[in-house]
Image 1: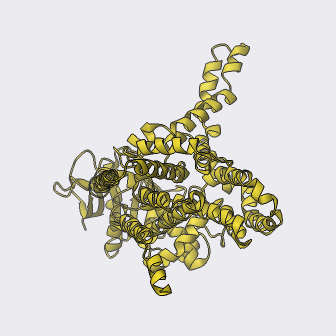
Image 2: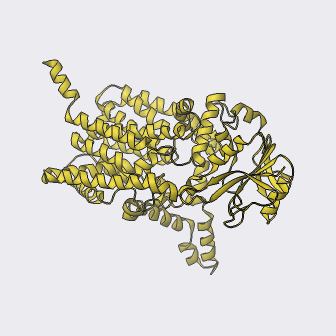
Image 3: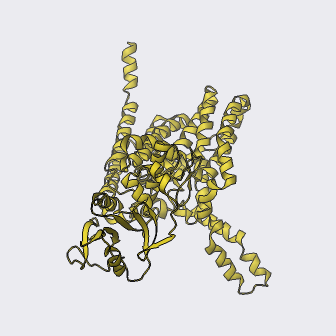
Length: 563
């Protein structure tokens, strides 16, 4: 009898539904995961993880660094460290990098489900929340590329879950919350603002429960401070805030120039200074960014203007869910409770960090922490309406969601890779493979570095040994000129650009020397639509060609001399 009961519990409709959602989440996040080429940040994550795996140093030679030094900036470490097992198993390729994000994205769904059950005490709302997070474009898109935010979201969800469990269970749950919240600071810069405010909100919301168990918080506080000590040193040294300085509105020179221009009309007039000053302009921009994050235009129609962050023509959330979101917000506002609503508070603070950055009102990466409260409010709305309109209503909702998902996923996997390939820095993987394949022909390589920084692409796709790189690399500044090619070098590979305006003539001059090979781009060294494979240039041989997706036009050439 007891065995029968336990089996019924294990295979309950709720459990089976959640397992189906989990399988769907996995399938949606790994299907054709390698279809798009890795863009620059993903390559950097991968080679940093590979370098740590092989040398225990980042690729700039820092031993087990708190913040990793890349060619262009310092990077938060935790996502890169978490990628090491995947790179070790799958290697330097799309799977090794993107499965890291997919893994954390799947755990996001698991912990959202657990957290909603814990807070709402409603299995149906939890199931709807898990399903909605599984299928909405915002979370699905970011789970399929090497973005740190799926890990950040996991840490916030797991930390919140552990904190609330700690109020009811053993002290160890508070320690788990402290670890998760502290590690979030090492994951993505948004956490610096969000996690700090979120911890204060949790302490305030549950202040009465905590009054009788403050002693139990002491070990968690000690762990939290201990983990954040290296982060604190990084803040004072600079790497933890270097990225924020680049994207912050407070460092935006365009805003400063606008203020100066306005004041120049009458520099001595106090009115000009009163209305045209940094405080006024910054406040206006922050408020605009904050409100834009909640706009239907961003959430339901167009999404992030950067095609790498959003499939054009789709919002971050399906438009059909707007009605349920509004319903969920109304239900949450009308709900009688002595405590402030957790989800509404989360939603209100989620855009703050992004609002402080240039273009932050529509930057889906920095606004990613809006996903859980939006999803839960939608789930509450669906459950509230379905309780009143039973029967056919649920069937209609499922049919519409299925249609929305299939339409989006078709666009994501069929048209998006062919139409937006440039935003994923297409062509470098195949081009570097051409370089590898022609080692017996080419003695020296000249690689055009003027489009995207090509060094990290060369290191990643050639699988360059990090130890060798550390011993042979000096600088990535173009400090030498070879045959009219301004460059820096690594072994027999020269990274840079041609100095003269007539670049085709520059290519000819380089290839006139036996053993030289040149990686050239259509519409750069090769003018217009000239297909030099079909209409050859005297003295130049096409060793390999990368064609653009869709129209199959020439995109990148590996060229050698005729000898």
